[in-house]
Image 1 (tube, rainbow, N blue to C red):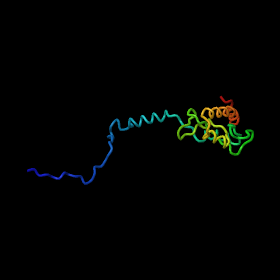
Image 2 (image 1 turned 135 degrees about the horizontal axis):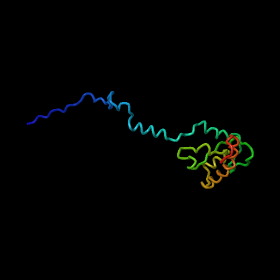
Image 3 (image 1 turned 180 degrees about the vertical axis):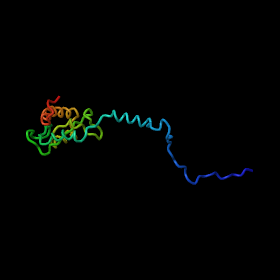
Length: 151
């Protein structure tokens, strides 16, 4: 009859070590293929605008009247509740959890801004109101920022 023996168990786990290249190897100075690929992608990546570049557009909206003119009574005076209103279209960079680019902003009072973002109107009506206000605001912003003629 065969005797059963107890299997050998290791008391300490095996140490994990990575593969290392030999120091005198001609390939020891080369980077890994995936590292090289990621470096190439990073060079080609489009650079995002910095906070300083976007803040000049937001600063241009200070002290201006509301350009949406949906719910506000007057549009010829600077309301203290005027803030930059961003465009809400995908083409302007808007997305889930993302705000649109700062160059697509116009000054709007608190009431009109709330109507634009959470109001009951349909999207087409909101886009039409934003485009009308932006067409009036763009040349004024360009003159205020010293950009020259707006395209």
